Length: 325
Image 1 (cartoon, rainbow, N blue to C red):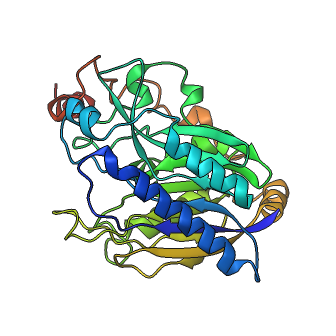
Image 2: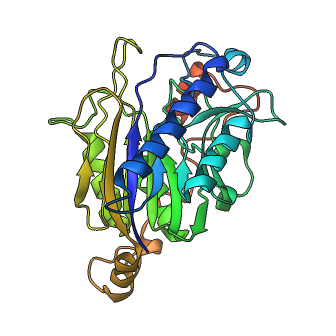
């Protein structure tokens, strides 16, 4: 139960339509293959994580435009390619995000990452906390359904793996729910932009990765975009992809800055399980006084009305959450 994980950042040009997805998938599968081969004399790399928007970036501001140009249904030929790569090398891949067109709802687009393994797709995670007001993707919370399904955790031979996407990580509730769902390795699939990047004084990227690992006693494998402002004006993404252990120690980190980078770090599931079983101090999961926290007992940010997710609707929901409606 000891292996290495690779957090891989990409630096593709900004796509305008879905025709460019296949070449991106081919490049990422190739990066998996070369990483496995390069490190084989030293250790086994079994888990791979890619960034948010690795397949497509939401450059259009409305759902009809996103569905017309960039959104895809899942599973598809691209997830098939990831599964083939997993089967060939005996690895697990948390894909970068797809803009997902839900087959039963033509009024929504999800920001979605898929965990693939040798046996196929193991879990599908749809971003619960889009970066509002600008992201017009739907949250599963907008569509109702069973909240127990929002944060899936896959039980695999290399540990229990969960995922949350970018802005999700600013909500301690998201990773805490993953932990209570049994997560041992939390993958952060991210396009975390400057100035909230990997260098002081606003190094939120590093801060939250370490904090979420320590407060939930779990490993974090965090893959961030490394695209430059030339490709994605007005934003640039600082990279800094990292692997963090269950005490918040950074085990490996790519130097901040744009460009493709691969960083690998050790994951010891046996040590994690032993610590979780042994500890009585600093075990925040068992110390959680659930009755003490009342702020979750009512609705704060309400689900969106059907067919009405846009920037202005997001702004209205923000005002409602502040009691300013």
